[in-house]
Image (cartoon, rainbow, N blue to C red):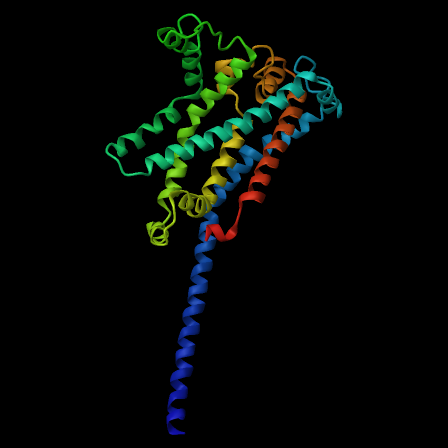
Length: 318
């Protein structure tokens, strides 16, 4: 009984001390959270001012007859959206936008993953190889498109010149044929951006513990089994990031198409951002262009939601 009586005050005081520490810890954490909130509040307000207001203004203009050459007619109307339904060029641009986004992102992801797997190996000159990955991505997109446009020139371009040296047919008008123009555009898009995907994938590959691969080797796993059962599942969050970022960029692609093909020949490489530019900036029809911008924003949100729904796994991020 004496021992129990002596031990009770110690236990009580110990619990009081621990509870006091917990309270101080909670109050300190609350102060840190409040301090962090006030630090990021200016950024949040700035983003709202930069992003929220233009977005709401675009939605408002999409329901108005807003043409700069007719400034007095700003009445509410659904004519912009009904005009989109009957606009043949809009549907062509929408179709190519989806086509370009799906194929270019697929090519950039696959090529980028292959390059990242190569850069992750041990070989002489690996540092130089990794540094060279940045070169295509660092170049401004418009400059890249213009340089490749010269390379595609049928008279003095690089591609026809190489084919001529090899004794192969070399009279291709790369940007004059709808099919060849689309192929030429995809080659530039994949070359330009696969380095970004490769760098992101390389960071994901290096975050995978080497002990996992060592355990797989002990179990006798083949290279294909290690890739499909270790590398790909553990790269799921990285794949999600690459797909979301690249799809958003591909759906909004403007400079690369403007610098390379201007949407031609005909409407073969015309996408929604370029058609929006032609209607809103060149045609001064802000209402019609804003309606296309709203449609484009809905498409981007739908793709992002689809990727997150299919690829997001909370346990893969733990």
